Structures are given as C-alpha cells and as structure tokens.
Image (cartoon, rainbow, N blue to C red; front, side, top):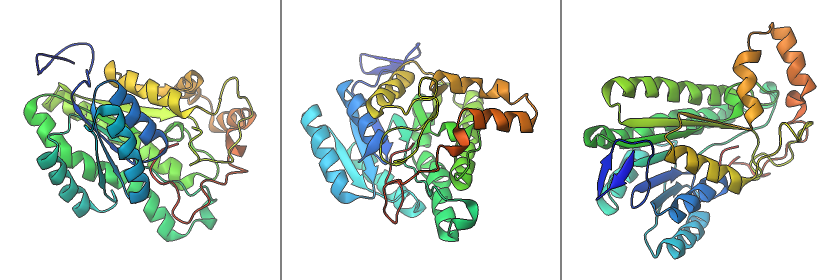
Length: 292
C-alpha cells in the first residue's frame, strides 16, 4: 500500500508517512526503537506503556524528532477495559490508528515447576490476551476505511520450544497462531488490511539479559536498532512474516525430523542451554514492554 495525495492506495508497500502508528510497550527496548524508526520515516508515533516515567522520557524523545507530533498514553494492556478506554482517547485526540504494532511482552525465564501461577497468568495476559483486546480496539476502523496494517511481535520461541520458556514459548506459539488466523480471516473480509508477524531470536534489549548463544555466527544476539529497521522495512514492504536471523527459517523443514533427532539438533545449536544464565531485568514484574 502507498499513500499519495492523502489517500491510501493499493500498491507494493505501506507508506507510514503522516500515518498514525501505535506501538504497545513503546517506552523501552524494541518498542521504543521501532517507534523512533517509524518517526524518522515520517509517521505520527503513538506509544503505550504502563511505566509512566519511561513513557514520558520516550515521548519527549519522539516529540523532539517529530516536532511535537508524537503521543504517549499510560495503559496496562492486560486490562481490556483500560485498553478500550485508552483506544477511544487516542481516536479522539490523535485520529484512527492505521498501523498497529502489538509489541508488549513479558518473560519469566523459570522452569515450569518454579513459575508461580500468577506469573504464568501474567505471561498469557500480556503476550496473548492483550493481542485480542488491542487489535479489537483498532481493527474495526481499519476494516471500515479499507486499509491498515497489524503487526504482531512474536518470537523465534513461537516456532520452537525452548527450555525455561514453557510459558513464554507457549504464549508466542499462540501469537503466531493469532497472526496466521487473523491474516486469512482478513484476506476474505478486508483484503487491504494486512498483517505481519515478527519472529526474532534474542535481542539485546535487557529483557533476556544473561542469555548465551553457542553459535553466534548462525544465531547471534540481535541488535535492537537493527531489528527495529528490519521491522520497519517489513511493514513498508507488506511482508507477512519476518524471521531473524535467516537460519531460523529452516525450522519448518527440520520439523520433518523425528522429535528425538530434532531435540538433539537443537541441543547441538545450544538452544536449550541458552537460558541457563538468564537474569532478565532483575525486577519482580518481568519484561517492561519490549519483546525478545
């Protein structure tokens, strides 16, 4: 899709210039980096986050970049009522959201038997159920106008299970399924509203501080700024799926192997020991909004 003369037209790209782009979990990590990247490309960025101190700092940075045309709203995406209320406020004060980036995410990084029940619920509230509340809040306007883009930041852990990620990996498998089902649903009902799912390996945001990679030349720890650029490019090109790094694209092929052989291969690449030294942000609330 491309914008020309103020109209959204069918084409090979999504042009974010002067379009309202909303990023959840946008006050830190990959969310903040992506909001800055689309702002550089001329978008009107709107960020949501529950950390009001970080939110204020991020909005100030975006406003300096966009000459004041940037907005931030405190919102806990676990709360459906708060999501719908804040979405109405965005529509009234900024306008309809034309590109939505579901980015907010958390991780526990514990073995299943060590994860408190409330932490498991939190993981699914943020990483899965919030996708429904936030997307339902903004999708109707996209369908009505005949254009729009919904981005779901999932994870490589949404393509393969990883030790010490039972809750996180399960939630990201759900996110991948959410995007795929929404994509085919929209293809039938609103073909000019497109979706993109993003499945990156670990990103150096701090959310996964302490993780290690055994084969950095194949599975590097990704740089936040690089990933933000790649996501913005994927939006611009209407890519349906972005997987980083490229070797992760082989997972569907490797799935043809017997499970025992597949598991041994993952062990060889060090995937299942990558979380052994996981520290994360070291707080009681987990990831603050950036994903992977």
